[in-house]
Image (tube, rainbow, N blue to C red; front, side, top):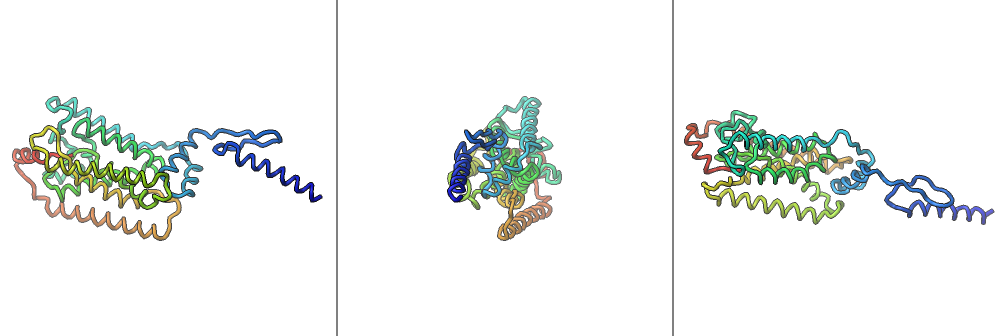
Length: 321
């Protein structure tokens, strides 16, 4: 009796061993006495697992995301905003023949952020739809698509839209305080908000993420070089240059928004106590900065150049994007 039971257990273990070791990355379809038949995972599930491994720090979060992933609704926000930015650029390219493709958009555009038009509050956000040349547009599109779409697939369109728009708003409000004579075009504030949000996630959980240290260093190197170029071009470029200078304040403002709002809205499937405290701290910092910037602009709303001719001359010396 004992021998029979032991033999049966060994037989069962052999089948279990086959199931565990044969084609580890596939799902078991059925088991019989002769062979193991496996079923290949669908492409969608493989993609979900890949995204989870790249974007989520904890194994439980990765498994939950991969098991519950659905293709609908698709990640529409980044694609929609990218298409609108391209349409706006092509429109200005066609309707303003006097301006070459690598020059600034017209200063009389209703979307461009201008210090003397602060009362037109839509400019604090809609300047993101304009770009100063093909290089500026292409660079922002590449970064926001490569970073934004994977983040959007994991965390949802609403959360990524919140981070992106908060970065755009922080970029214009920060510029209105620290670079008050400059005007703005471009979505760099939103792009840097996405980068900073992803960077914050990696910094807090780099030991649990695939190639966490490498990705952290790559993002830091990219951001440092880009901001360094922005600072150099802002203060060293000649006013007569055909290439507009870069507003580093918008980059920094977008990054600060991404670091704070990213911690608030990025999905955490199982929040711990210290993460809740960090959530409130981040919310307090962002709200305090936004409130201060709004009050500052209200108090100083009359401090701009009123003469249009003088302002056009001034703005040519402070072109930025």
